[in-house]
Amino acid sequence: MIGKSVLITGCSSGIGLSVAEGLRDKGYRVFATARKGSDVARLTAAGFESLQLDLADSTSIRVAVDDILGRTGGTLDALFNNGAYGQPGAVEDLPREVLRAQFETNLFGWHELTNRVIPVMRRQGHGRIIQNSSVLGFVALRFRGAYNASKFALEGLTDTLRLELTGTDIHISLIEPGPIASRFRENAFKAYQRNINPDSSVYRDKYLQMEERLTKQGPAVPFTLPPEAVLKKVIHALESRRPRARYYVTFPTYLFGFLKRVLSARLLDRVLNKVG
Image (cartoon, rainbow, N blue to C red; front, top):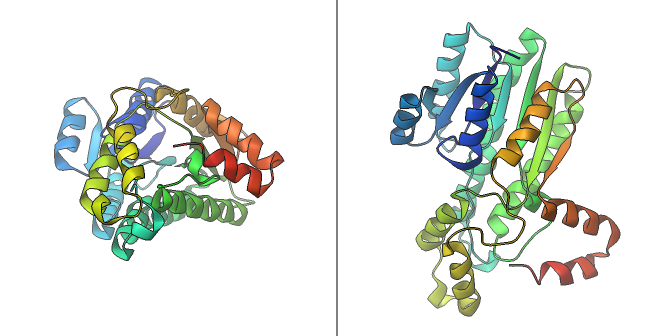
């Protein structure tokens, strides 16, 4: 795979940065993108080919893709859709525009970027698309409704795309991590502070508990793994002759995947209501 090109979104920290570093070390030509110019400058200083790409901005997506294709001579071997954030808050406390913003970054931007890349992969006759979903793409947890919805929608869109790409040499995989050490909670807390008013909510006491979890130093839950755990799955999805449709990461993902298969909806709700 030496020299194979891969575009990665959300490389400022966490999973995106870990995967960018790991693939570069394996000889891939990595295009590491980030939303903020300061992060792009830092990635460039670290030796990456880095570009600004804001998933909520169609112009930013188009410019970044055109730039990358100009550098590669019109080819791209792989796309790792990763850039996302979590918007905490009870469903009844989510204004329409806040839910829309969650989908703009976590779904619509991924969709637009993927649709710009697929024709390139069709022309060259091959490609790999990897979607970094979540355990919350197939089970829901309280006060994470916006994020849950964006990941459930991503999984449905990805499953459909996988069926439509049957017969091509373009493979698409979902990665479904549970708790991973990253800045995800830090960024989620900022989104919570921007968009949720706990004092006007019937869930005020629950929000106080949630704030403790979001601001806790170190892992907030058991079985948290480093982002390198995701890197291993990405490598398999990139290099296997028959990549899987789904890759579980972390014990909670395996556990909830099993429980969803064997429990009734009512019993599963009891379990999920004890989490978070």
